[in-house]
Length: 135
Ligand code: C5P
Image 1 (cartoon, rainbow, N blue to C red):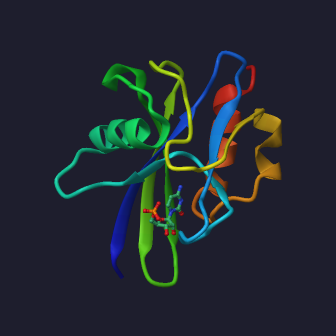
Image 2 (cartoon, helix red, strand yellow):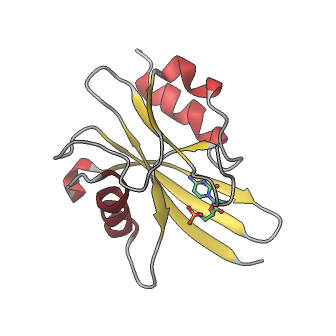
Image 3 (cartoon, rainbow, N blue to C red):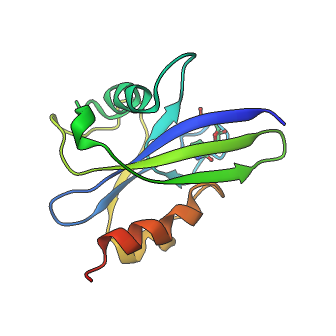
């Protein structure tokens, strides 16, 4: 089966809220809420792809040192297998805005499950809750 590599990021603000972006009309899985990111271009490293996607989609600048890998999503869709590393980022430059017309939401960790997500993204939530919950 074809393997597709997408890289995603949980941007976390100073209040501990997480940014979700809604997939726009006309795209696969339209209306579902995802962690921002996108496909790797040929030869790209995951962090470089993520930095490029976050600039294109949200208008922010993220430094390599501010991206921490957390886990991977791995999901078999009907026609491809998606492998998607999830990074966490708490520092960026610029004002976040949906540059591609997508809706955005800052979501408290306990509310993440209220947002319908693609099947690849939903299993990432426990990993984020584990990271963000007090010891
Ligand atoms: O975003 P894009 O449409 O390029 O992603 C390719 C495919 O990867 C989507 O059709 C979707 O099935 C999957 N995807 C996902 N979760 C994401 C991003 C993409 O399941 N956060």
